Image (cartoon, chains in turn blue, purple):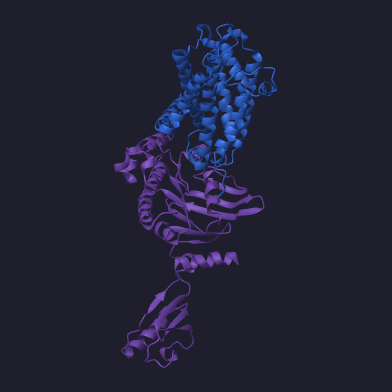
Length: 254
Length: 307
């Protein structure tokens, strides 16, 4: 009970600090919605798989939102806090380190959930996106698994980031190319070489599972187990790595 | 008296670099001890080992009876730590960061009382990012105090401060020490050690080269004193002044001669000197007796180490 209270209190203060930083909050939520509007106008009238193309790429934008909130945000924030000495200071108090980490991750998951609601809401309201009622459960499972995977990756990648300046370059350098070859914003034939490469990484399974979950023509049982397995593996391995190697102290030695 | 900190045979190697080379240190409960030394002497390494941030290569350590390696959480409930650099959530207010920190401790102090103690009463609703560097440092001290610590670690608390901000910080630190709290501070400022510390340990190249009260360290109180004065024109020679057998140096000053005598027994020397002056009705210009300053002692101690 006491642990739960500590995590809840930490979560409250982290949310407070987050929402008071208008620039940070604005870009986290503005970017995916802006992408959605831009792609929707580019793809106007286009079709894919017998459906309006919006039905493909809006779930893709949703995954982009989850990845931004979990992987990108978490890794950059943790690196900055590590290098500024904020994490070091928390380690100088009786606050259990796991409680801080759980609250930080939960903060990102809350943002991810807001983004899921925002992208799907805008899609349904303005772009004729169909989210069938029978897919709600499947979407929830996929979003939770995806958020867990990209949070684990976000924490793990801080281990190889040497300083705060390098954080955006490394974080984006790893994930932007992968996002494009994963067909996040446009359909990509599964027989293409790029898609085959991408299928070993977690973004493409996340995108395909999200698309299939919302596809009104197919039943959600068409979500292949191999996609979920892929996400689970990309969750567990980085998690173990992060637990063993995560650093609370700045890398620069004075 | 019970020891707040007890360290023996402490060593820390970073690869081939021996940062701490066998340190024994005891801090009494209620005492303010300053670890004084140049940059790179090993001060921060020692303090971070005591705080549990780094692990020692060898040595026995007890902080309030806890081993910081194995019993860190319980130790952290009883100590306050001020690190060299201030780093606080920029978008929370002063009161919020103190309340948040208070929630980590079993018996925290009242956040509003701490705000008053560190002189941030008017700023309690201000966001941290709007505070000046000096005010953020006060908040830092407040954060270290919120858990009502028995022992306070201050790592170079005023490095980078302007003289006014340093004096203010000293006032705060002094106000904290009255309550029976033990303080271990590191500094490379002699005056800071002199003002704040009950006892000083001078550290150079990873070993403690001297320790004692600021007034007596390195034999300051009993060591060689310097007696200086301008040789009066009426005196034909220094022998006439009773200085025949002394070790003295002469340096020209405005066409006259400044005499400087090193002596272990300044009292009889001064007696001879002033008796002569009184007998001849002469005022001795520039007369002074000086013990080595803490800075002199510090420089000689740390210079020997470099040689």
